[in-house]
Length: 111
Image 1 (cartoon, rainbow, N blue to C red):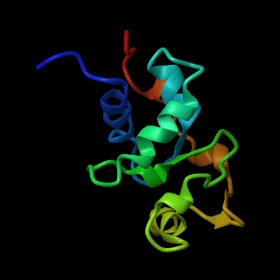
Image 2: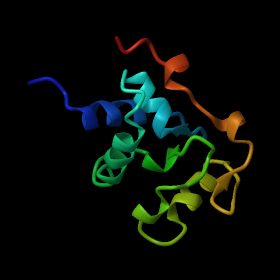
Image 3: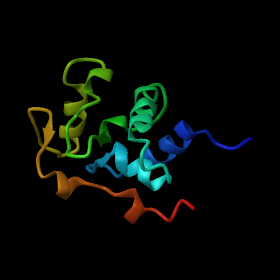
Image 4: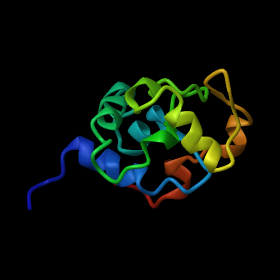
């Protein structure tokens, strides 16, 4: 098979986010060597719902559920996170740093 496209690389990283943890679009982009591509990671998450990707675990850099409108139902993203023990108030993850998972620190170097 040919070289993986950027979205496939994003999905590979997102699939490794542990249960009960979250990461940011920017952290994934930075891990993949494309630090300025956080928006592309967001687009990948928007297109991931048919794949086995825990997109609900990817939020913006301050813990806001900016992608929630892409989930079926008004509060599905929040409900999925709360089912994993993550408290969300007004679309904001409480104790964001406690739940934050940095692929750059947790995974082997991508390059």
